Length: 82
Image (cartoon, rainbow, N blue to C red):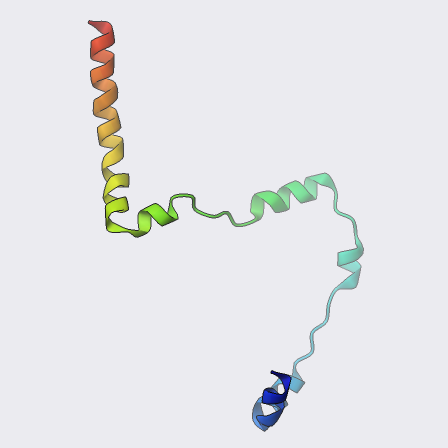
């Protein structure tokens, strides 16, 4: 891969201009439990319903499930109070 980049002179020239500096001091500092907790809260989370909501059938299920659950619980409450 590196040899392919070296063959492209213009691309190699652009890549040589960039310099990456790694902040070693910040990496060496130990974080407090509070800082780790805040980082955990701020980290992105995955959507557990993403696979279900991507399909059309799953979307309709998610749209109609609250209505069906409400009707079910209303009937159940009516039976229990009767």
